[in-house]
Structure formats: structure tokens, C-alpha cells
Image 1 (cartoon, rainbow, N blue to C red):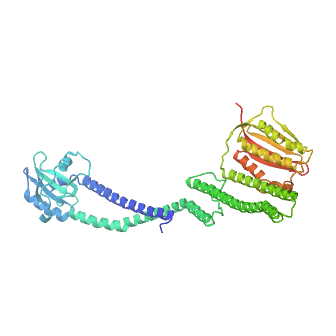
Image 2: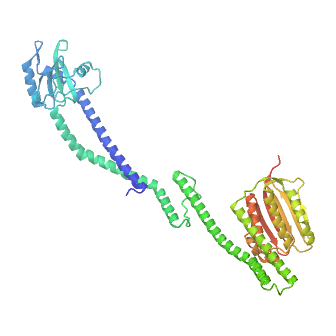
Length: 491
């Protein structure tokens, strides 16, 4: 019942309104009681004086005891709501109109009596109730026989015990029949309004909770958007919804990336098994032939078998080295050591390294650099590895008499390097897969000694260097690889 936020808010609203209703009832009852006492005392301020004058309680300058007793009896029968007491100057109760068994006090405090006579405090002024040790009530008082020659006080309790009982019965009846209904109706209206407000406030949280549950049950694959992109960020609930949308999108992207990586891993394992099996099978076959036919083979034949097995072993070694290199780059076993580098000088060094191979194939190598060679922040050995891979591919796929050109350009933010050849080019269907591991395409047969990892290694290195690599090609006209590296601005 109380598992939802709305239910808890509703419960606390009910408890809060109940507490407010009870507090309001207590405070209203107290305020009404104070108001009635104040009004009663103001209206009956001179009641004690009127009783003394009306009943001739003072005769020849002295208090008429006989008239006082008759007054007690008369007023108790005519107006049972008041109680009349005769007090001494010290506050001691000398005579009274009440039943003797109900009198609990022997003395009445004189402080409120003096304040009443001197008008020192505002109404209501409460004095001691002779019938109760703890209660105080509104009163009227006058000195007798006179103010100038007082012998005592005529002390009139305005709302006596009988009045209090009748008032309590009437008040209870009113509160039960009217006040209680008014309170219940008021609390009901407030509760209904509060529940509607809470429902409107928690509706978006409820919807968000349901969407999160759906997203979770779908295995974090069924992304359900809660926050509309065109909406502006509002209150905390809207901000929470926007954060959930971003989180769900990121989780979905990571999930898709993990799925893609898993598929790539499976494909990679299958490709590795296939590519490694070929040279291993060749080595095993040639060695078995040498073992079985050793006596019948000539020296030249034995050397040929050994040379073929050696070449297959070297091919296998290169494949394993490239595979470990790519795995190390993917795992970031050796983070790049970035340092400022004059890329133009590095390009000259790499071209010089491949000059002999190019001369043997009658391929011309040319470099176009800038007048002021800019600096790039790179790992020199990694970038040299990229240049080696690209130049080696270009030399492999460029026919004799061809041309390979390395060009350098720069912008405000990046350094651009192009390695272009005029070879036979790459078919358009192969271009999107060119940087995938073990992909060789139609041109792969031109160099069977490579496993198709060179371009994958080059792309991973460029990612680690915070750069990028792209390829464009036109069949029968040539291929261009373009590299971008972050540029260091000269001060």
C-alpha cells in the first residue's frame, strides 16, 4: 500500500491535516473561551456594586448580615450561573452562597482583586475559584461597606459551577453536531485538493519509473525516450528525465558497441584461425615431404623444400607479430609517448628508408612539404610505423614506372598528410572495410605475405595519437591515404 511515493505523500497529507484540524480545534476552543470570559466580565463589571446597592447590604455604614444571606438565597435561585462570596480583607472566605461541601478553598488571592479595582490589567482578569484549587474564573468584586472604609469584599464569580456544566454540555453538543462536521468537510476538501495536486506532481515520476522498468526488462536494449528534445529544461523532474534519457542512450550505445565488439571478436578469431592455419599447414606439409622423401630427393630439391618452409615460417612470424601489435594497441599496453615532432623530417627519413625498394621497382618517390614545417604532438615511433605501412602498401600496389607522392599541408588546428599513388586503385565496395583486421579485398592476392593487419594497425595508432585516417581511390588511377594530426601552434 505504501510502496509508491504517491501513497506515502497521501498518508503524510492525511496525518498533517488531522494534526492541523486537532490543533485548530484546541486553539479555537481556547480563544472562544477567553473571548466569552472577557465579554462576560466587561458586561458584568459593576455587578458586585449593583448587588450591594440593590439589596441594601450596607446599613448605617456597616454590612447587613441578614440582607446578605437573603441575597445569597435570592440570586442563587434567580441566576444560578453566578456564585457570591464574602471575603475578608486578607482574602479569607467568610460567607458564601454555595453548598458548603463544594467549597475547596479557604482563601482567595487578593492580587487579581486589587488589579480589578485599580483597572491595572486588561480583561479578562481571572481570580481564584473557591470550588477548585487549580481553576480560575472571571469575576466582579467591590469593597464593603465602602471603598474608603472596607471591611471585606463582595466577590462574585460570574460563571459558576452550574454555568460551567451547562456550557460544557452545550459546547459538546455544538462541537459534535456542527464543529465536527465542519472540520471533517474542511479536511475532506483539503485532502481531495492535496491528493489531486500530489497526483499531478508525481505523475511524471510515475511515468519515468515505468519507462525505467520497461528499459530494464528489455535488457537495456529497448530505449524509450521520456524527455522531448524540443522541451526546455524545467524543474528537477524534467532534469532527472533528461539525465535518464542521456543515460539510457549511453547504455544502449555501449550495449551495441559491446555486441559489435563481440561479433568482431568472433570474426577475428575465425579469421586468425584460417590465416594461421594456411602457413602452418604449408610448413607441416613441406617438412613431412622432406622427412618422408629425404633419401629420394636431390640436394637442390631438399633446399627448395627447406626454403619454402622457411618463407612460410617467416610469413607466420610476421602475422603473429602484427597480431600481437594490434592486440597491444587495442589493449593500450604501451600508451603513446607524445612529443613535438617535425613531421616533414620524419617523412624524409621514411622515404629514404624505402628508396632502395622503390628504385628496384622503378617507382618514383616525391615529397611536398611546407616552407615552414609545423610541429605535431605525436609518438614518433608510432607515426613512423604508420608511414611504413602506407608506403609499403603503395609500393606493393603501384606498377613499375609509377609515382608515389607524399604531401604536407596545415590549417589552424590540424596537420594534413597525404600519401598518394597512381596504381590500379581499390574497388569501391572494398573501401568501407579497408581498415578492418584481416581484410585484404581483391588486391590482397598481390601480396600474400601480409595478413591484412597493416591498415588496422595504422587506424588504431592514429586514434591513439588523437588523429584520424581516411582513404579515397579511383580504379585504374590511384589511391590516396589522408592523415590528420593535432597541430602545435608556433608562438
